[in-house]
Image 1 (tube, rainbow, N blue to C red):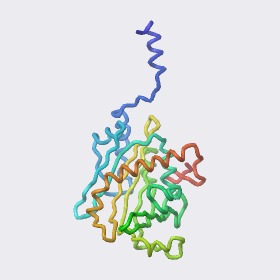
Image 2: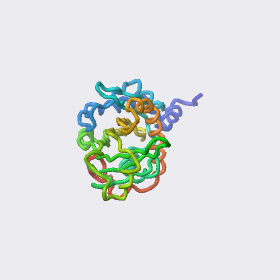
Image 3: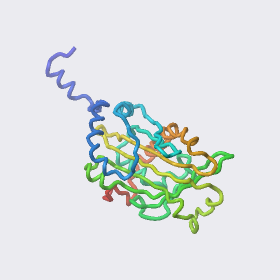
Length: 258
């Protein structure tokens, strides 16, 4: 029991302010909704308020979306990372720090501005036998217009494959054209939304046809679980980077210095 009204008020005001409820955080997320029309990645999964609330309450949500005329399902998920948006973004845009992590055998930049919009990425996935390893070449884009329109509320990184228009010939990774199978196609995106409590809401979707003898519809069945694993693995890399300076040259979605 409080000894006096003034003492009670002082006690309340001196409590930590990390008490943002899922409902209040959802309002923050939805405040940026009008600016989603500027996002680069198309055919994004539809996430309900109930799913956002679950994620904001500490329970990551994942699923699969089926689009008419497509055999491959779109794996998607929403979660919260307990790190600030700048640190998450710095990790996402530093693909070479993922080399040898997240089940990736290789993660490397082939051309374009390091950390910047328009870079070309090579990545390979080591699969257990009798499956053939997979690789892909993707062009990375940053959602500058959405970032500017939302005043920094929407941080988008998206990709589209260039497996059929680019070659590994003449690169240190040319051998992968013989030892691995290219994905038939792949596209997807990360979307980060900074929250007032210092955390980051993370939306992610991946949409791919694995190529080779793996039917896309069969592979899609595993997508929701793989999305949750991707969240765990990515946040562990983000945590590893905490305390380190941002890489020289790292930029925000609009190209300004991070």
